[in-house]
Amino acid sequence: MRMLVAILLGLCLAPAAAIAAEPLRVATFNVDATPAVGTPVAYAPVRKVLDPLYARGVVLLTGEKPIVLCAVDWIGIGNGGHDVWREELAEAAGTTADRVAVHALHQHDGPRCDFTTEAILADRGLGGRFYDNAFCRRVIARAADAVKDAIQNARPVTHVGLGQAQVEKVASNRRILGPDGKVKIIRWSKMTDPAAIAAPEGVIDPYLKLISFWSGDEPVAVLSYYATHPQSYYGDGDVTSEFVGLARAARDAALPGVLHVHFNGAGGNVTAGKYNDGSEAMRPVLASRMEDGMRRAWESIEKSPVTAADVDWRVREVQLPPGEHLQRETILAALDDENAGPQARLGAASDLAFLQRHEAGAKTDLSLLRIGDALVLHMPGELFVEYQLAAQKMRPDAFVGMAAYGDYGPNYIGDAIAYTQGGYETSNRASNVAPAVEAILMNAMRELLDVEEE
Image (cartoon, rainbow, N blue to C red):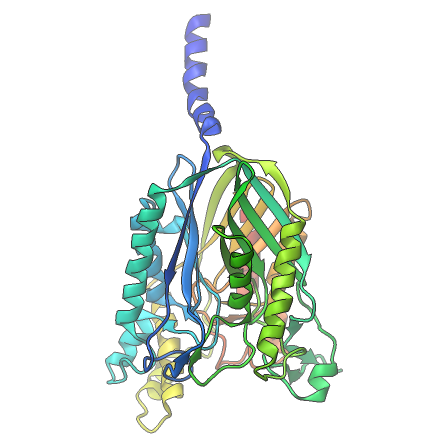
């Protein structure tokens, strides 16, 4: 009888022991994602390319289904576009789409990718004006091929390094409240208004967080997270990875052979507006400040051993509530108004895309990656920084990072009080979700972070 119990116990423990013994491996990929001159980007056709755009990321191999993390130098990837990105990378990696996180960095002279909205526009003869589907699909295919190749050359990882540093004079909250608690001044990405410049930084997360993967004493890849709109000047179709991409490139050069993947945190209500007048001279200044934060975060790294058993992936599905202003009849009237401007009809198409998906029961994946003591949440939309700060407060015992700008379909996502304060970000024009979104997201974050509700 004792022998039978021992055999059964051994069979039960064998899978866990196998996972514990499994080394963590990391594969890196990086492909060009630069649009051609004359093709559409966010606010104008491409006039020239100042520096290239990339889709770059890592694949984590643990013995279970792979985990793919990808950051793209585009303004947004939403709805059906986000679905296809995740599905294609999942197939390439031999995993499922719920184990793939794809995020845009939100550069404002970068392409849009949203196959749902583009289909709505194309039905009305407006196809190809704001989106270049063929280009988007080529980049997706290129990234998928790169993922396949990368996995063949994955490197064993023995240690993970965690570090953080404050970034000086970059981020500032864009919503400056008056004495009545309402938004008095909107601090855009570039500002010359003395009152906006003089106002305090406001609510931001000043820290850039960094996760590094090591094979012995050799660094393999770096993931960094910082919450801000990444614009210095924009709008004329001069394609650039902006100050975040330029800082990232500088770190690539400082650490040859080590891929640096940067994710935009919950920067929906954060810009560089307090410190940026929109002049060409400020872009390298902001890039230098970002690079300095990345460097100091790197220098602060504390390494610890890691195996596959130290990696976990959790997913929570949520349905984001549409704002009350999203009424089908009203949206269709605006969409089909041939006298309306192109941007107005684009906005209506985006609204309809989000509403249609909601009516069809589409849900949004929120996910959490655990690597040792590090926890990273992957979130949708132009999320307010309050969510990032709340996540850190939920787990003060851990190193908590956040990547936002996942599915771009909901556009801005404020906290509940923000919808009572006015301002652009929570207006009907800018946000597709209702104030109830805060409770839904906060509850899901608690579940992912394994925190009981107070």
